[in-house]
Image 1 (cartoon, rainbow, N blue to C red):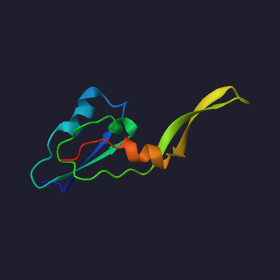
Image 2: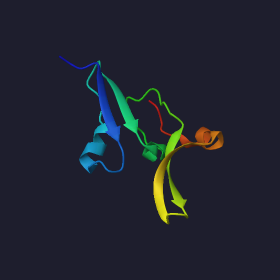
Image 3: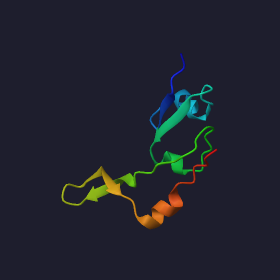
Length: 91
């Protein structure tokens, strides 16, 4: 009883062995979906990936001079950055 899709996260806070799962082939007849942060922009090759969907959003460190604090805010990425950013190789 094989699942139709293998869903995996990929981000910097995952343990190394959990990150490695995205590089392993999915069982026969099973699709693989990887939900990744912009770590996937670093020219990774993931077997079994046919499509990359980029939501056009990124968490950016924003400094607020009034509070003296830096926070992570979800922001839209620019079109020029978007056209260059996804270098994840699809197979």
